[in-house]
Length: 535
Image (cartoon, rainbow, N blue to C red):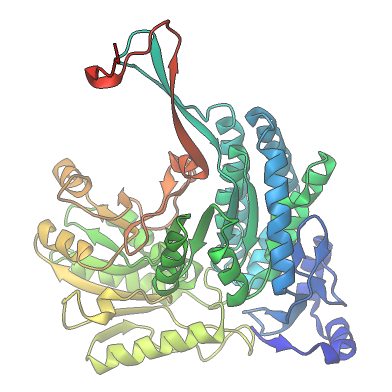
């Protein structure tokens, strides 16, 4: 993120108008994003932004896509006030009516699915099919939430007292702040917004500082639906900016729930800040995900599954496969097949349909890749493939690196090469003899997001998914660590943060629960047989 000086605005306008490639300008124009002026990065019913000016930079070409006016402290304070006002109005709207709003948002997203997907690719760097798929994920969770709006049920609990019944009742929670990461600049917000709106809340979104355009485009679509239905725009507010903006949201008592996606280091700070004011949090933090391949595995499934898990999104998914444990009997064959796939991979423009490998998101990510490769060499790891930047890339200014397969000499999971998540396409391999050994390795790291086992033996499946199996939040069989669907709750355990978003019972975090005992008798007995009569 580069801070621009307001004094240079006239020059800024000229450079944007002259310098933006047709590759980029066509995508921005299709979403009505101006290409010759600074863009407002705050929405609370009105578009504004009086904070620092930041640049959105394309990771494929290095060109500046736009300059965005982010939120000042006053902008954030004002947006929070309007979010609270919007919640107080929206909480009394019947849940099925909220579902109708979500249905319309779903339609708005579907109309612009291809254009939004292209913008994700342009600004984040993932290949086009993944960018479109991410928008589809938002569409899917809207479909889910439409149905959920008629099924956000409480429970009737039997009372021990005659003429009494107990109800467990969900009600709207308040204001939900969503702090999302660069790697899924649409889907993670979609998971949260859909469930939050269905529950009757207002949502305020702080996206990654490096993907502001995507958030502006998405918010514009949602805002039109709210305006059409005479609802306050602050139900889906937006405040772009950096760390100071996030700190205000995290620390505000006006925010009942903070949903944060990011690193373990920052997540620890967020979690402590929220709990210190007795707020609620959903933390989606580091993933250090392992795939285990048994000797009976179908390698025609396992090899491409691991390949996508390790290389998809250039290794920048929370669920990317970073550790690979191979049974000794099939290790050589598996690695030979995997290296052939890696060898066929070429970096390309992620907007082109035949590209499978796009860039890293930022130069800082490239530096992280390089430092990890240096460490692998320092511990004398065998680098089977990759370990450097490409000599030839589609664009000189792009952040392209070679996906890497390495075999460290040590399988001590406390070593940083195993225990630390490296957000880059680096796959570390170890060889095992017994499934129990591989499960111990899988569980030996601080993180616990996703895991997968490749086998055709039902006994292995039972062990893997049972109490002595994987301790991750996602425990797959014959499916890779990446590619979760919206129907099940998404999240991890341990230092991944214990948060759950998307499907399943995740919606229950977005409401406040009340246990309501109702006496419809002519007596007032106490529970547990307590007698407190004064007679």
